[in-house]
Amino acid sequence: MIDGVEVKQLIVHKDERGRLMEILRVDDSIFKKFGQTYMTVCKPGFAKAWHRHKVQWDNFTCVKGEMRLVLHDAREGSPTKGETQEFIISEENAILVTIPPMVFHGFECASDEEAITINTPTEPYNPDDPDELRIPYDDPSIPYKWSAPQGW
View 1 (cartoon, rainbow, N blue to C red):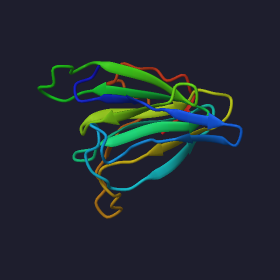
View 2 (cartoon, one colour; view 1 turned 60 degrees about the vertical axis):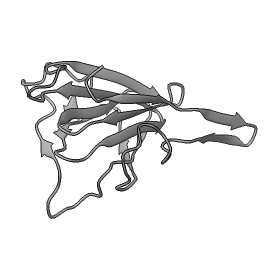
View 3 (tube, rainbow, N blue to C red; view 1 turned 90 degrees about the vertical axis):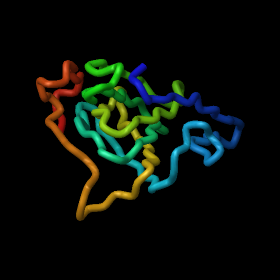
View 4 (cartoon, rainbow, N blue to C red; view 1 turned 90 degrees about the horizontal axis):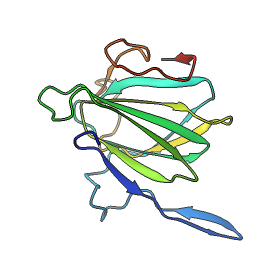
């Protein structure tokens, strides 16, 4: 496990009416603070990568379809520097992955249907001063090859 990354197994309550899944609670041990909640969709054949934040912690889960979330630790001084970690998140594998600042991350749709992802970062997005550094999804500094033929 990359240093600082945490995984929470989510509990899905199902009955004849549908299902309910708690994602992140203020009393969870992994909870840091609330910035905002947003949904993003990734279509089959696409990867959304790579980026990292200076301050923000991300909390990712997938609520529809299947998402391949990949992390890469390029932090100087980290005990896991150079490690790459992959998670498959879906309705069947309902987990929340907490990503610390400065860890590169990205995801791709890993199903035939679009992947609907929820993120609850610790900071609200500031369009005037975004807390992110982006590099291309096929940047050679990260030893990972996406399955998706397209990315940004």
